[in-house]
Structure formats: structure tokens, C-alpha cells
Image (tube, rainbow, N blue to C red; front, side):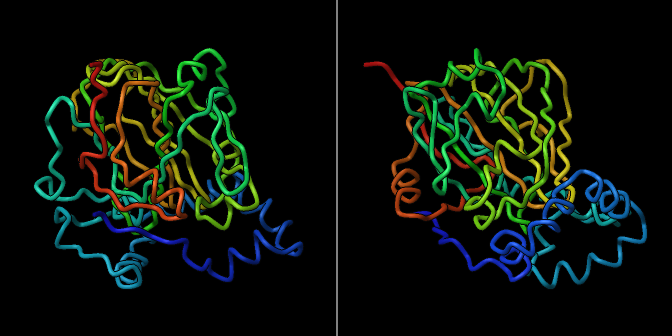
Length: 283
């Protein structure tokens, strides 16, 4: 069985921003793009390197797992590459895999393509702002991968596929920690970018990368084209972030523990390239 995570106690700063009336005006400023651009410019610069050592210690990051590099900035460190042998991809065609290291929650999509998180109802239409595409996922699944700030922040193609162009949707940048999900429709308010992937084994899978507070920049490596399972698709720069994978009805059978854990209020730890389900086989 995989490791489960219960919702942590949010830090005082986030409780103030999301649970108090006094924090609301400050939240509007911090979740806007202006602050993120300022912070991002600093984190891209050489003076941000001084933050690296303290960050590694605070988050207990084992740097021996990553490729050795003299990081030119904090963002270069944040998007560091893990040693490839530590993240082998399941190569069996029927294996449905995780695109990233994350805490996973799983939601069954209702006939109206909706699902509920923390009392808020989401629909694939509000997530994608594309009614025609959204309807494809009626009765399917939404896999939600939450990347904490200490996680590996690169993500990869889950299968051989023909990829369409990326579609960017403007928005704000709330934190993706659970405390924010209680108060805001984070996944449909935040900046996000989606890609339709015509996969060889799992039908049309739409991957949505969702940015988060204090930059959370989305950097996709490619436009439309052909790509292979395990090839790097992109990365998130500083900030916790989220990936949502939408799969069609009768294309994937998720491992049973994910739905049960989500129902019980737990997230489940998964690693990039790890099998999290199998191809749906028609009898």
C-alpha cells in the first residue's frame, strides 16, 4: 500500500489569508499576477541563490537524488533534475502512469462532468472553458496531482501520443494547499494551461497544469507534435502547483486505493512514472 497523507494544519500565514476578514485584502494582492512577476524576476536572478541552502535544510531535501549542478538561481535549483534511474517509467502499454511526483486525489466525473472538492462543485467545462472538449469526459475520471514545494517539479508524458497545442487560461494564483480549497474554487480561478494528448493506449487525455501562489509558472517544452511516454513535457517554477488529468469513460481502470483514500479524506503519495491504473479492456 502506498503512503497516505491527511490534510496538514495550515501555517498561520495561510490561515490568516484564507480564514480571516482582515486577510482578504492582502490575499487579493498576493494572488494577483503583479506580485508573482516581481517575485519571479528575483528568483530568476543570481542573488536568489543565497536562499537555496536554507530551503534544502528547511524541507529536508536529499540532494544526492538529483543531478549535480552549480545552480545559477533559485529557480534553476527549484526545477533541478532528478537522477533518471530513480524515476523509472512503467513501460507496459497497459500501464497508466503518474506524470509527476505528487499527492494524488481521484474523482469520478458525474454525467454532467462535475466533481466536488471541499464542498465546491467543479465541472470540466469551467476547468477548460471549452464545452465541446469538456463533454468528452462525461463519466470518466479526474486525477488531481498536488505538488508540494519540496516535490520534484518536472512532469512527463504518460504515454506515446500526438499532442495538440497548449491552451493558456488567465487567472489568479492562489495557493493549492487544502486551506485554500475550502474557501475558493482554486482550480478554476488560477492560471492554467491545458493540452489534449491523443494517446496510443488511453484515448484522448487532457492534462491541465495549474499554477499557484508566488509564481507557480508553467513552462511547457513543446507545441503540437509527436511525443513518447516518459519524455519530459515541462516544469513548474517556484511554488506548489497542481496537475489535473482528465480521462474518458471506459479508458482507464484506476487502482482502487485512490478512490477509497480520497473518499476517506486522504491524499496518496505517487512518483513520476509509477503505475496508478491500467488500460480498460473490453471483454
